[in-house]
Amino acid sequence: MATGTIKKVVADRGFGFITAEDEKEYFFHRSALDASLDFDRLVGGETVEFEIEASPKGPRAAKVHSA
Image (cartoon, rainbow, N blue to C red; front, side, top):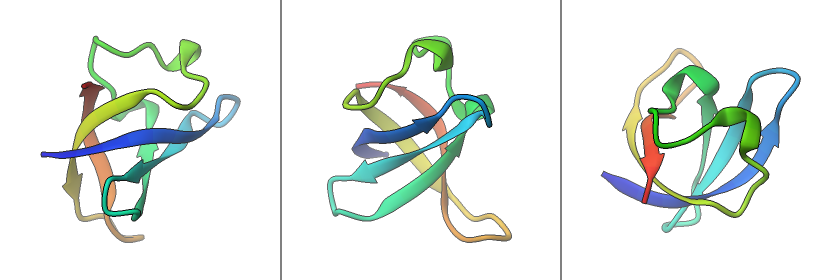
């Protein structure tokens, strides 16, 4: 499980980016959030925990939840 901070949310497109503690950036889709986070209320700066999974475009965040 990785820990990071919501860096950017693109609300109208349904995705965003998380900066992990190791400074790597991970894409996330709104469907990757669990019930502890409301995508429509994310503004950036929230601390989250997530798993990293492979995708055709590279690693991405999955199972994202509040830290």
